[in-house]
Length: 586
Image 1 (tube, helix red, strand yellow):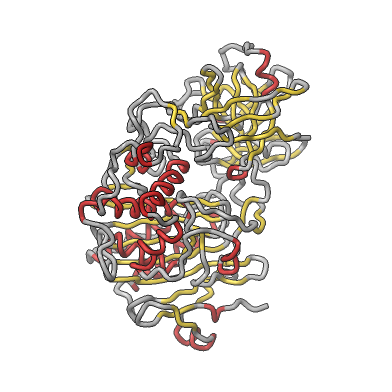
Image 2: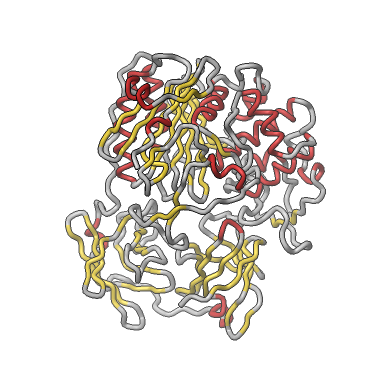
C-alpha cells in the first residue's frame, strides 16, 4: 500500500484544516520524502509564506537526523509566534508496519503538559475570587486525608510539586483509614507529583461545579479555538489517535534500538495528564502563552495571574540545570529571556513544549512512542531558530548528531575483572570508545544511560536491571572504579578495600521479589544487596519504623511497606499507599 500523502492539510482563513488532493499537495511542494522512508508533511497555518520560512530547512534537517539517531517512529510539530501559528509539520510514520506517515489531524497524548492547563483553570478561579492559593487544601476538600506534623498543604504547594506528599499513589487509597503521609514541611523541597495534580482536578471541579472535561472545554479549548482537542483519553476517541508504540518488555531498561510494539489503548481522565491534542491546537495554546495569557477572543486570565503562573517558586533541576517550577510549568532563563517549558510522558507518547515569552515564539512536539527520546532538543532548537530570525541575527547551526549509546568516552575506566562472593566473575574490555562485556562466549556491547556509570546490557541474561559501576569515592567522576552491581548481585575488583560481609534483619530476605500493581502498570523488583533492600537494584530503601523510604532523592516522600508473608515470601506491598502483589518470576 502506498503512503497516504494526501492526508497533509492546509488551513482556511479561520485556521480550520482543509483537505488537499495528492496532486495539490505535490504541486504545492508541501510533502517531501526527505530520505528513503522518512516523510515530512507540512502545512502553513495563517500566512501563505511564514516570516520564519527561512528556518524550516535547518529544522527539518535536524529533526530527520535526531529521529534516526534516537530510533523514533514519528513526530508531530508546531511552530508558533505571538502573531499566529507559523507551521504545522509531521515527520516519519504514524504506522510503521504499513509505512504510513502521520496525519496532522491525528491526536497525540500530551501527558504532563496537561498540568499547565489545570493550573490555568485554577488561576481563572483565583481571578474570580473563588480560590485562595494559600488556604489549606483540606478546607476546600475535607475528604482529602493528610497525615502531617507540618504546616498545612495549600493549592500553591500542590501546583509547585512542593507539598511533601507522596506521588506514587491514588488520591483515594484502597484502605479507607490510610492518610497521605507528609515527609517534610510544604514548600521546602521539590518532588514531581502526579497525585497532587489529580487532587487539583478535584479542587477545580468542586469550585467550578463542572468536572474537568467540561471545565477544560469551556475555560480553555473553546476560547482558544482548540476544536480538535480532547480533554480526556478514552476508547471513544481511539480512531482519532495516531498509532503509537511502547517497549516490547516494559519491566526493564529499554535499549535505544530495542524492540517496540503497538501500544494498547488506554483510558486516562485525571488532571495530571489527560489531554489529547493536535499540533494545530497546541499551536493555539502556545500562542496564548506567548501573548502572556491573551487569547484570540479574550484574555484567559489576568496579567497578575499570568505572572503567578510564570513565576519561579522552587528549583526543579530534574527538568534542566537551572530550571525552576511555577504553577504547572517549568521555567528557564536563557540569554535574558524567560522560557516556559514542560515534558509530557504517557505509556506510548513523549512530548515537549517550549515558549520564549519574551521573544514571543514557541514550539510543541510529540513522538508516538515512549522510549527515552523526548523531542526536547527539537523544540529547543526550533525556539532558538525562531528567536534568531525574529531578532534578525545569524541562525544557529544544526546541532551535532546524537552519539550512539555504545559511544563511551571513558570506556577504559570500566575495563577489568570483577568477582562476586560466590566466585562468579564479570570481565569488561574497552575497544576504543566501546565497553564490552565478555559473557558466555560472546561480546556484549554496553549502552550508556542518562545517569553516569550506569549501562544497559542488550543481552537476555542481563536485561532486567541496569549494570552499575561504583567508584572508590562515590560521586567523584575521576575516582577509581572498584565495584559492579546488577540487581542483587555484587562484584568487586582488586582495588576495592571496603567490607565484604553485611548483616541485615532475617525477615528482609522474604521481601525480595517482583511485585506488580494496577497503578500505571507498576512493575517493581526488590533485591537485597550489601545489607540493604533496593528497588530495581539502584534505589536504596531506608527503614524508618514500619516503612522503607525510597532514597533516590534525599527528601523523597515515597515509601514501601511490606505485607503478608506466606511460605517465606512477601505476597503484597504498598508503594506510598498503592497495592502491589507478588508475581512469580522463573
